[in-house]
Image (cartoon, rainbow over all chains, first blue to last red; front, side, top):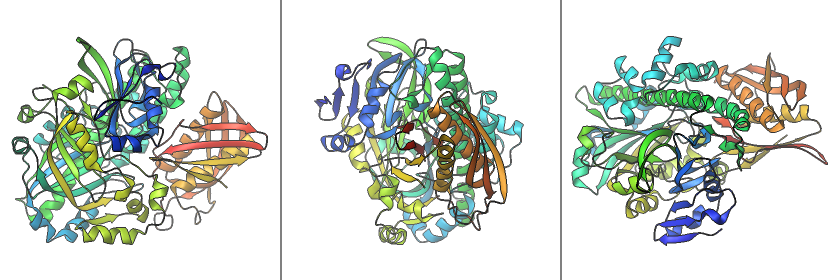
Length: 476
Length: 136
């Protein structure tokens, strides 16, 4: 494969590398990361994405890219809103999987002294794990309201305060969601799961601010050294999974009608303006709203847990909430022309620059907050978006550290208790529903998050604001 | 009965059988046993399942999605499947098992969906073969 180094952090696979590619692939990576990236099929997948009808700009690969299904995870592709396609594979099964960062007025020392109590309280109050059900029972009409309103529904019901919704991407709810486009099956799978974390790589992590790299931005975000924050990572649960399954099946059939042939069936897509494309987008937005409501309800439970332990004066405020599996209609300038495009972010985070009107007014000067969780036991980062990301990547950056090892490989030769003890020696308490939950997510199963962040920072796609270290992790 | 495939972010399996009916039954069992420890599951209850497709591959994805739906929405653990009728366009089957009881049944994985990634369903000289990658 021809991989041309454009500079220290940019590589290009030219479109003539394979027949059918409509554009180049641009990869953001260091020399070290690109060697890891080449070991799996993620670059072939990014080349497959370059064959999508109506793709605008390049097929983009972030430094945390790894092999997914159809799209690579860590991939970004924009398609023309009139002539382009929408691909559910470009969003993934976990629609609006994302992260929410919550700051507190507690210090590292205050929490460290009562860490075991904190972990146990969170584990009691916040449902996580395989098949977890939440305490909220929704009628059909209520579920439809969740799908239309997202986090705002949760706030209206008392699961949060007004400010929480304001500080989420899209105000915690995308317009244009249609509950009627979400199947009865999807609603049945998702209904009991509002307010649950789930399992796999989803978690809730208690962290402390270890480094500040940009004082002004940190101040605007309300972050300071040694402050305790909590990162919530989860998505639309089985509701979103079923929506993806339903529309993949429908599009597989419909594609033939639109004469679309692709190198990978998982890339199944239809024209955005087709009835199937519009139906998927309406259902995807509904699922995204379910995910925002989900993270909002979890934050409410978290608030309750911390109040029980530290009293009513504890402050629990939303810093920001970002989606990293989503497709959104946005305006971008491409080759000097303003275009309406559908930006598919699959394992990628929106990173809009300072001044963008979609950023909450309090943050508009600094740029959109970008939240990047690292692996269990390493570090997470807060960054802000830049003008360069807007020009080069449709305002997008990476979403995490990126997996290196399969879950089976991560489990091989490791013992959950040893992993737990090793993390405990580093001051990190882990509580999981299952042993596998710990082993599959061992820190060494992931790329080094600092190297990934260095690439996006040095390439100018986002600016470092703060580095947070974990103290406690609860997961499925 | 089946072989587990490692994949960076996901998991999968390969199954082999003499007939398509047996192949699809085994694939259903493979999915269930990746999600749950099935040793304690008794065939106390049965459940009818059906799916449609337009070729063997799409039928496999839609069939396993149906199995996953029964597991996820109805919390029914099925350890054995009998396929009554099958063609590349449709499958009708019955699964045997019991409702999930967290006291007795250990969950292993949450499966989000069945993918077309590296999917294969084919007749080979030695019999029928399928490879399926699941998103977890």
